[in-house]
Image (cartoon, rainbow, N blue to C red):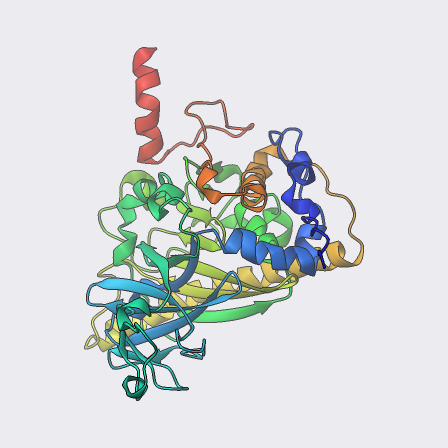
Length: 438
């Protein structure tokens, strides 16, 4: 009996995304389906998260040998561990009968063991033991043929990334100029401190894309964040976008004339004038949100759970050398008090964001009006984000992915904002050839 062909869902066709493809001046937002439809969510797990470089953990979580992490990526369970100096990733399934190897993060003694028949694997993924199998092995059985199924793992800054598709460009290509753009902060050296509240998780009743969109635009600041708007003023916002799979904005300068909650911690050393005065807010596609200040970073890894539910895994990190030594009791007390001021500020802001994002989710799910126009000055990063999502959902092969170009030097992409008075060094250098030519 011949089965009828299965029709591809409409969102895999370019026509579905036609309204978001124009430049922001004439583009619309995404349709309600992409936020509220469970069928779209299931396909998105495969098409988008199953082919993207997804942030899943902090590099420091795998610093100690013998640590094994369990993460969900694109609906698939993945193991992460360290083999010597190299990070390794594997599908969380035994090569014998497919048993789940680990349920949750745990410590191992150099061997990953299946709980069913005790097949054992090295941290390099080699099958090192198949108990009692030698008594009656199948013909031509060679343990080298039965390694754990590997997945791609890489790091940038403090984040560990996983990619399930071999055709996806390397992480360095995915990042574009972001590593160079943020190089002055030396983010790979930033650490989570031993402080109450330095890591937390929020269970949010909204689609993950709404959280990214909310993070990437500042149109909502005066009404949703009246306190935040005093230290991250609308007039001091500028886009912060070069080539790469990210969208971003910067506050330059970060104000302290009304509230100094963001600036009470000791700053990093060696920052240039722009980095030392600014807050960088970057949404790295698809699920890594970075708020980098001169003295701390608020990092959020989004874990989609359902069309209308997302876990926010939040961590505060600090520049090297700013947290006092363990034997400096007074210094640690003062640092903890300063951190609590900063933490409370961020929690209040995030609570406001959660409330408004959940209201948007309810509006999309319960009423679902057609999408409206974008505000070019404030929401161009959203248009950029929407196009990245559309690319992943429509491309037959992610090998054909085109990393978005960056904003052009000069005034071409200011969208009615003033020029940044302290532009990042990478943008100053990009503008030099045209200035010299003129």
